[in-house]
Length: 552
Image (cartoon, rainbow, N blue to C red):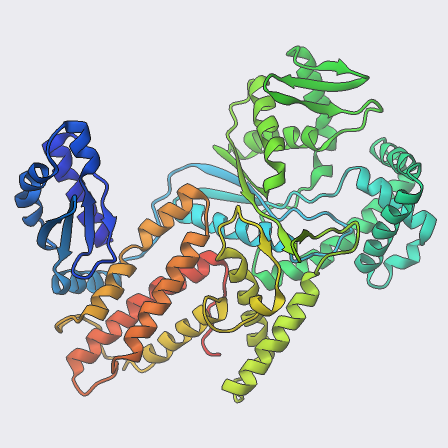
């Protein structure tokens, strides 16, 4: 948008004069909109800061949208022409499609959510799911073809544990009614029993080894467990408004593992270490490719998956939305692929844990908040809020559900992804302040104003602009920049903050202005501002995966 054009022109002035890429910052100082710190160029070029300012002042002053330029404490401070900038910005917003780049003919595969089957969908699983969903949308806006994969945790020793527990402490009848809840109980019980009798782990490992070798009985149990898990997961993905192109779990790559191992042998990178197969990685710990009993491991399946995705989808980049604690795993994965002469770029989009009372939630101990519980509480609170504020609202249950999901999604995405989050249900479900429902409410308020437009009314900017409208326009003009930064940092929290600030600035203007006036030209201008604001806010909501409501 316009502010990007202005910054580019400022940079070109410095480039032409000094062959230097000047940084242009936004300013919070009154009567200053943009600022150029001149310290670094002064040091590099060995020229006094004041002389640098004097040399570029005239060129900057001649740029279209710059009203005046001044010097203070090492900065070239720029004030924009509020009327000219705002008129052009809001006129452009009426017709220009924002955010979307042209296709770049590149493909990325994003691996996200990836819960373990046979376990309840917890509030911890929400992190990878909503982060991945938002990053997927950001890459699509940047012109990529994006393929979303749910790499289900449907293989590994845990299924030896689950089958052992089902056969020893339960029965297949437990899968007939609330199967995932019952399987979770059995999983917790296994680990309690293991603490008393460590020997049972060897039985579980043996069961998984037989499962890998095609034991029909165990395969039948495993398929039944997976079927019930997918039914439960799909329920939550629908609520979260998240979809995937493929549900290809770890088991999908079983028939590709032998080829991977044989190829490593041919390349002479596979070594024996106490009967296990490893790949040495110099400064990193060796990658364990297969155990002494021949069982495959997580990294082996990820190697097969990476090669498959690269070949099948012609992917330029593979994104993995997985927790901080898997950092070493993805470094090893990249290094092994390099040793296999695979030209595959791995990007680990890491995120922090969801903590409870300062501790990590654990399925093994049963210390975990299920999404089902949190969602029910959120819907209950949303319905209470609706009853108080808009009791005549139609389809209250559906609206409450969407408000609840926005609270859960935004609570996660407003935080920088790499940080741990301390789970607090009461704080998460507040319906004012920096929350999803606040953004939804602001969008609804904008819709209500725009519904007052007569079908024959053509929006246009005609009036003198006040400072609050200019402030709003300046923020709106930064949307493309915010998306590009969110893309380069794989950080949806940048869009979350941008949306919240936009809502704040809009509501401040709305609260101090009469939007529909007796002056038709003024009304058309005001509604143009509302239109541009809603267009921008709604794009942010879509990126975050928050549903846009017509009323609430």
